[in-house]
Length: 546
Image 1 (cartoon, rainbow, N blue to C red):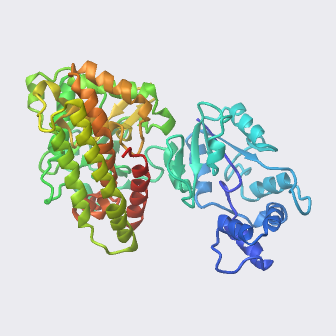
Image 2: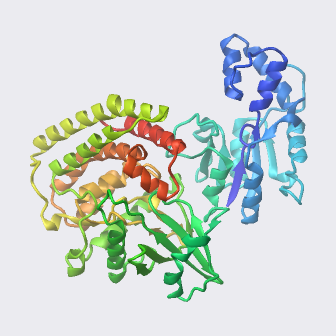
């Protein structure tokens, strides 16, 4: 990989410096937030656009040495270089300011890099030729291509969306102030720690497991020739369970600890165990190898997959094709006795009315929110005034559409029209190996289900969304591969907005007490996550066709 990085407002943070200089010149009151955007907007609002333009030249020139680096940027550069990846800095920067004194802005930028150790072999170790300061945006885009960048990090979504942006380069938006929405065309990160996690798997600082928590795993590990001194380190990513990498010498496995809430009767451990055993017995090798299970401690031991998460632009026709192949392989032997022994999937539905009833229950459950904070109150208002009215509109539309298509709401799918579903299926639960093959994991909700629900869920996953332009081909592939009757595609089309709304509800699980406990078990709960999930639900609702 070769990672290109923008300079201004990406590596360098000017928030405090702009605020300080404006206060020195009595251009802004103290209550203006210490943020470059807020300072700029205030000056424009009071008719001081020229002062703002002159200020930029002064800050980027005479005061450049006072600017601060964003937290974590030095750690990012060190970690990426240590991993053996290439790095370069490519910036669009005029040679002199448009207004005011003619400072040499290029020399000021290079001086800042020198001052902060970017060219010091003992610190960050870049070469001078690794830095390109281009006079125009077009030259910057051309330089990104010429330097062979595989990824580029910038703070401006309009640059990443430019038609001239080099094809095949993964776009990464650096958005520390959370100004922009998620978008399938780029990865959005809000910190350099998040940016580092995009490139490095497992995370840079996996936490070693010690004490009593570690002792739970040792009996199972000893059965597979791991000694008491083996290294066990927590991996990030699980929203519901705890996942660890186990290392000893050249051996590496993954151990998973499953959460169980007394308020939730679903057996996630049993469902995942059954699906893994069925898949491997059928010769399917698109999942990690299931090595052992500890029923008493609810542990699963798996082969370690050397791979990485897909990037949004990699969710393309080839990736969707591999997902389809996995579904068809799982269902190639669905008439066998082994498949008949699989459980019914979590929240499985076998009639249109059951689909609607399931989502209706989720909407009702969202009324259980207990208001303890401003975020809780915002969620309550959003659910009542936006989400639930949208749900009523969609459920009415589905009822009318079913009548027009001649689909009976209470007609139950016969066994031959059902499928073995991985459930919660999508690229968020996949790793890309070096050979280009995808490996799928996390089957805690798996079992028999309506293939229309499988298709709908696949296109509603929020973390790595699949573009709807693939919907027709994917649905047709499922229909042909599973020999489904003609009603399947129409049923799947009707159910897509139903499941889009269901996923809006899933994003709000943190606001429901017993669902939040699962997040706490996996180390992912908290007020910050609640607010982030609420914003995701708002954005997702805007995409629903009501």
